[in-house]
Image (cartoon, rainbow, N blue to C red):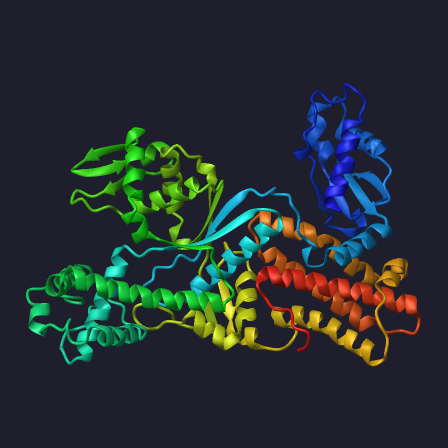
Length: 585
């Protein structure tokens, strides 16, 4: 409906008397929005106020001229000028019925469009370090990224979903040494566990598997392990201690065995992450490995390209990126004086690789604590000769769990750790997906466990799904009376849908394509959640005020048609969110 009205306005503007506007008006200038107040019509547009500077008349006069030039349309009951120059549109009743006709004709495709014209976009999300199970914060990133990808595909993008495995950094080394120490302790070797190690229970099964694979071949005497190591916390520095312990492990068991422990730990953690996400309904086209990328020479090639374009320099034995010349707050080290690359170097190479694979838009979903990294990465892309605008970062704020009004403590290394799997097992996938998406991603989320598990109208998951199930129940009642739904009669009888409640449902159905476009374009899946809750509310209100299975066949068909239309839209919307649409509850 929105697009059709914008097309009408474009025709009207182009039909204005010659000389009224100083230059042609681009179609992109015309934007129709839903009216905030139903008394002001169904839609409104401020194009006359925007074009006033290009015309020799006041906004209200220009608005009147545009209204006068509007082509006749069965969509419109009337249009009028309001306020300083707004154009308000009042839809004809038949226009609302057109939305229901589209629902029946398009089915599960209703709400989708080809607006993005196949523009390739990569959505990289979650990308958690493979050093432990996914926690509840990762779950929010997973739900957001998966839903955003669904929405982008719904408006016509060619979408590629990717998980970047940070499997070459210091945290992986800390995970590796944590597994080895647990392996030693299980054999009775009295080695203290590092304060900066991964202490949670998930490390022990990996150590047990290491024992099954390697037997006692990696055991070393406690005295050899701890000899001359610096003091650990609290007396010493826990960072220095764990780094020294990693070096000692390498020296004692050798590079090949160290690599074997690292690979076994990574394999176990990645298998758990993959399974967890798959059970959560989150899939990826590709899992990109930092280690594999480094072995391919991609990092060296990226650094060489930066240097060839004059965007690196050497200082104090290190290689620096001229990041401050490209919007960053300061220059950044790429390769340290000891020859080791910083974590920034493979990240640059990875984003260059994304562009080389043909993705015009790169959308990264990061945790909120990475906000300072955005300018750095955009600057690096500019230094490579890429457009900074190709990278878009969606920051996901933190999640706090509440049980009975009490905040649940969470921490990864100390063992106070609530995993995504534990959350899913307690409240279910549907509640997880929808609760994660209820609030804007740029706002912190308080996740109420008791509400998520409740089966009443206060729980938005239950409330929306119950509307879908209610329609299924009505259709079962219809069949039990040996009656059948007649779609043709329903579409021929839409004029019988005259009540306030029926009009509200029809209007909501017409809005669905606009909501999808808005949620995708603004990267705001929560707007779809709010829409579905609103549609469910309109349906429940109508259901409680009306009888669907009445004696008059035309009225019955019209009402059932509207109910089935609402059910289809609820199902389509829930599918985009990754939430099921049950037939009974």
